[in-house]
Length: 103
Image (cartoon, rainbow, N blue to C red):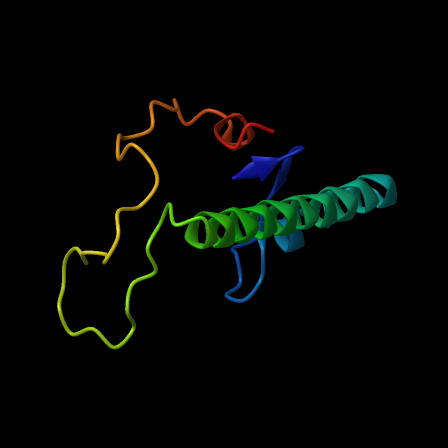
C-alpha cells in the first residue's frame, strides 16, 4: 500500500494503523490524529455510559427482566407479574442511536 507516494511498512503486531502512518504525517497532522482519537474514545465512553443508564432504567421500571445468573435453564424466563411494554420489535432504522433513545 502506498500513502503520499511512500510505501507503508508491514503492520507490526501490537501496533495500530495510526502508528504505521505516523511517519507520513507532519507534526500538525499527528496532533490532529491524536486529538481525533481521544475525541473518538470519549464519544464511545459517553455512548456506553448512556446505554448502561438506559439499561438500568428499563430494568428498574420493569420493562426488562434481569436474567437469573444461577439459572441453569436456557431460554425465556417467566416473571411473577406482567412487565411494562408492548413487546413489539422496534421499528428503528438503525441509522442513529440517539434517535432511538429520543435524544
